[in-house]
Image (cartoon, rainbow over the protein chains, first blue to last red):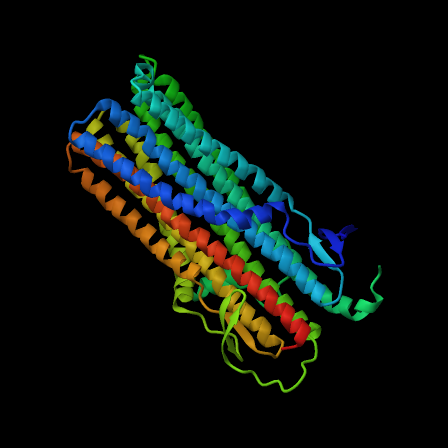
Length: 219
Length: 319
């Protein structure tokens, strides 16, 4: 059972045993590979759609189809970016999980009490901004598909406003990528906090192992 | 880059392991600055979308499109630089943690039972095959390359992205008076901007490679300090794929840059068809490098799991 323990330098939980992965870390461990696999499928799909569109332009193909593919190709590419950035974020969560679990197990092996860093503010920002970025990119991808499908279905309104939607969706895609990069920066900053905590905590262990051997630890 | 190694990657002996990281603060500040630039580009895109449907203002849309593309690419570049700054902070913290483990582990380890000779060779572990030696391992070629190349890659990337921004601003001023020059500049902006992004991501990849080096070297030093055998994980498949993907992705970015420059010699109708496939190709190039970065981070997670397991064994068995 973990209890709250106030240190002056770090906000930690104190327990007798190592704590396992928290929910974001379990999600990260489960999802990094599916996301990477999706990205590795989406990017080639975008290239193929781009090549088909290029061929239509070069051979004087249907203007309607060219415009529709002009929506589908970025949709595939940015589905790829949404996936690969999600995979990076999940891989960072996985690293944070390795620190949390491994650091706890090492402390447990010394026979002392286990101090586990509570989720830093930067990690919370990391999760929140990553969710915003993913929703923004997925939203842009969905709208690209909707606009492309409307153009392919002979909508003169959609064809007439394709340029306008192109600008708006490009803006959404760009800010989605920027937010993802910001989230990754915060995730990596959390690793620095964890490393600092572990550098301090490891040096405390010899004293605790000597002064509080396992048979005299408080209940 | 021995100087970069000494100054940036490994803190001097006796450095304060309790002090907060300035690189962390600097990285987060730079990242927010980059996102602010992307916000300006977003507003520009919204305005361009609205104006594109208004007869009186539609003529100004290509100008906005030109500079906002350059600004946005530069903003991405700034945030990627911030990621590199934070990675440098991680590198320094890793070494401070190694020093802490080296100070604590000899005291924490149990007294070993039986003779203490190290049996060198290869063993299987839950994290893959590992080499057993009596000393910390030497760096691999890829580690030396990563430590030498991260700074030049970041510098080239930043310069290319900055050049792209300057060219984009010039392009915006030439849209009306000289549309042909503006078209040529558009090719340069796209080509050099994405080449810069590719170099920046490669610099980040090299920093991740440097982190893997410090884990390998530092993990070996920590085990050696305890006086027992040094177990070192062999290069995992994910690490090999990481290197391959990074190189392929960077080559794609160099390729798209060359083709964009070649398009400046084409007529407008040919340019349109080339742009149709070059856009997805340049994005795919970045996607390939990013996929490599995923695998580098996964490798780091695995190596950390292995090292925690090894430290636990030393504490429990003394060897």
